[in-house]
Image (cartoon, rainbow, N blue to C red; front, top):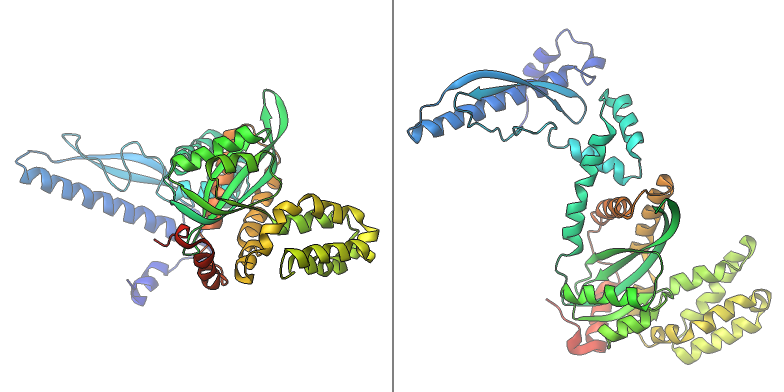
Length: 400
């Protein structure tokens, strides 16, 4: 719909252009006028329906109602009917916020802003004095959605699932404790990525991971072809108990990052290509030879802890060499999960610590929701990798 220029000229006549979008300016006046017009039309439609049903009902004045919009408070005239059966769709009887207002609060919360920061932002930018209780009520409403999401049915098979963890500070029994938030990112047969779940735990171990694996099984997962992890305690025993055919692969990206923790900043740039010779080797034998060459070389002698770390993880690195190059790229090119982790860490860093597990879950889920909305296409390498998965895993690679 295009508004005619003459109409716009009439609306803007004699007005200060700077005040058009200000609080109680022209835009707010238009919102108010349009809302009142819609409400009146809704009542007309309701009364027509009542009359058609043989019911005697008519208008009965107006009541005033102040609602919170996205950028201002609006005082509306809500039309009433004599029988009291009219419930507007635009603004329901007990609704005090326009559609879109809650999403604005939730979006700010997802960026890591605290309740008081959101309150200050709404007051400073829009002149809206919103109580902390209202903000908490809006964001807490997300928890029901999170619960439904965490229990939703999943695909029967995933070619790849990345399991990752990040540490956060959460208040527990009066003390601020370090807890781990675990994520599972699944890649479906068509290359689509999906977060399978969020779990919070103080200590990880076989019992915890067995509970997670059984949860995935109960939600419909029957097979995971490759699970990519980073030395999670108790994970191998748990996944082998529930998904015995799954190949367990150490995350090469995390192993490289761990290696660089032993290296001074000035040496990191030349060390990376030296490590690349190991994980880019054509097979396990060549990879072992490259590791031995690294260990005997300049950087291996200067930083012996690097080769030791690779040797400790070698049994979980070896499966990587059995895969063709296309599949290897999918495993070590973890741009999606790395970008996701960056957003999560930024939001957690802004927040500092959380009062409860639920508060942490709420923020993490909201950040995930915004981040995953940007996932449009499968990785570029997926087309070739899909063909290789079909050859390697045969009937286990299920294309819906």
